[in-house]
Length: 258
Image: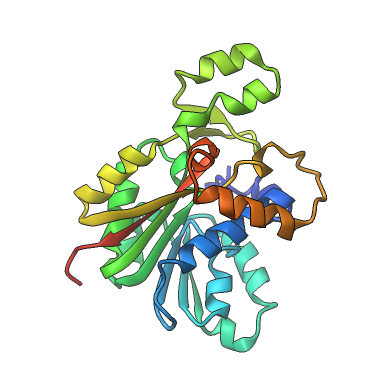
């Protein structure tokens, strides 16, 4: 049996989820949110659990030096395939590393990064603490730590809109859900992750929503991505809209000495 938990899901995740309207909106919204906090390139970016590089390869195109770290050989193979289509200058700015997020500091030789990203990974770990600690250890002084997590406060919305009333009622007290890929996922709150940031010398700066309207769309929808993304980006920054998002994006800045 393969030790690669993502081997059977990689095609569905990379070629399906990310290429959907919802997936493209996620990439667009997160990128614009990140650019509000990033310094001008060059700078070193660590993308923990970065999969096929959908979020970090655009940063390499913009001039940042990117280390994509992922525990899955299958996902890294997808990243390598995707990277092959990039210009030589972009390929030269990307390094692929196989390792668990919890082992990121050791796997990268103790390098400190201008920005550390971990998007859509916390929901697949039993406890967020060890991974958050690892991310914060990798951030340079005044560096950015960016995480995207499942919103524990909105778990009832999806089953309610799907008229699964018993599931919706149970979701008010739930700590996770079965995701669209058929995998159980765990949810967090902004407040809990912000406290973990502070415990690791990272000061929370702000948080955003990521999906609100797009999350309830048919996966096969073909709406104009740019139009949907423009609305989602505005909703992601404003209350009460961001509070209703299915996932949230928390950004912090490291106080630790480099």
